Length: 214
Image (cartoon, rainbow, N blue to C red):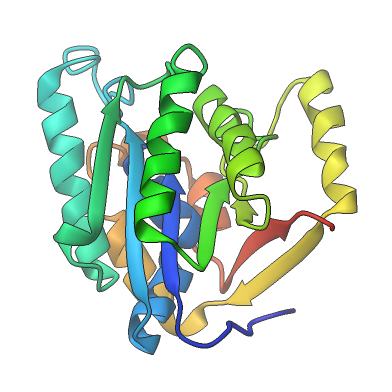
């Protein structure tokens, strides 16, 4: 189990939707903050279709709610709101908007020049996650990649087997587990969509990342 992090670094988390940054990396982000690292969060879509009720589905009200939740959640991890970047691409349309998204992310990378990046895997079951993963494999192949939604189709599970050639990293976060849970609880609009098994996977004593083999 690997828990070593290099000397102080500029950290960037690529989050497809508000809440992904906390699910995947809440513990390690709190640890980065404690170390004095410069932590930034890039939230790519507006999350408008992650609705707890039909009435809120696709609404600007839900977009505003999720922005506010993300600010409160990341503050629990020690990240100031000004370190959040909201791209506001429409939820679930990364594949359609891929060229534009790639250009915008490249601009952010050139501006921030992060030393360490956390990105969704290209093998995630959610389309926004997998498309962003493919973009980041191209733009920043040495990122640490995370998996949120486990593939449920045969073809996608076969694709996931490619991870056997990647290095798996488990980072201990037990000291920061409460910070992460407190942050997750700020996503009140999303809690109804997190079943017990899902939450258990993301509130363990460690967080899992994958690094591409060179």
